[in-house]
Image (cartoon, rainbow, N blue to C red; front, side, top):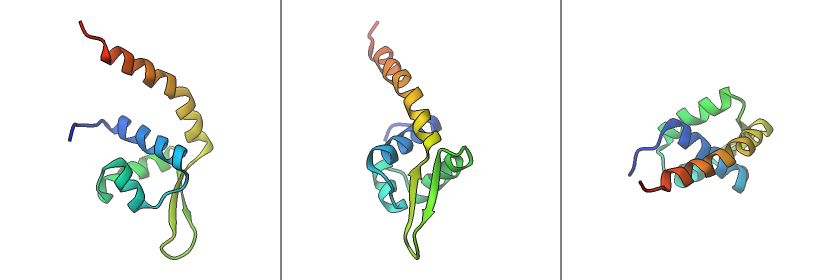
Length: 92
């Protein structure tokens, strides 16, 4: 698997939660293709920045959701990512 930066993984987590809604940790590990230990590290970082929150809906019912602030970050960074991909695809 190719190296992904912390930034890229965090944006991927935010994007997945924004598009698919609340998800359990195991569902998110599959979508992001990270083990639980690494995913938890990224989720902690996102929670500290108030981009993701954890919702406890009872025993074994813990879901992660993107916050309004997380959605705003995605709205701002989305066009920048698209432009960066275009630049990256250019051949010299």
